[in-house]
Amino acid sequence: MAMIRCAECGIDVSSEAKACPHCGKPVKRSSFAKKVGIGFAIFMGIGIIANASKSNHGSTMAVAATAPATPEPAAAPEQPATAVQISAVDLFREYDRNEVSADDAYKGKRLLVTGRVASINKNFVGDIVIELSTGQMFADIGATVQGSQKSIAAGLSKRQEVTLLCRGAGKVLTSPMLDGCLIQ
Image (spheres, rainbow, N blue to C red):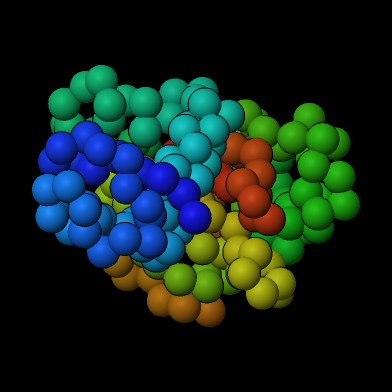
């Protein structure tokens, strides 16, 4: 049995009591679900901040927090010849085998990644994200697409083969991530 302070009169009251014996105000009990919800929100907030700081090489999240939203100009297709060519499955395998080695090879570098579309979604800030299948459950590669590519992304479908020119953004949880992608 723990003692808590009455919010009304300030007297110590048993946490088991239904009301304060001094003033009669009902004793508030915090629910287990509320505590779990607060803990989950804190955990997610830390994860989002850690991810933003981990891949903050011109990330859209940092820009969104400091600058007003402006439409991105249509980007001319870049020359893929200078990019590292790799399949989505091989990129996943490289990160699964050794994240440190894979970061050295791919993080921050231009990548030409080919794979099958698992889904086309938007993230919590409204960016278009194409998930590329890796053959592993819950471990698709997340590719954030430039806003200028919206109409092209809208024309994609699941299981369609696609090639993306992106910047490697490391690994989050179990999945490699790609930023600033252009659909080729």
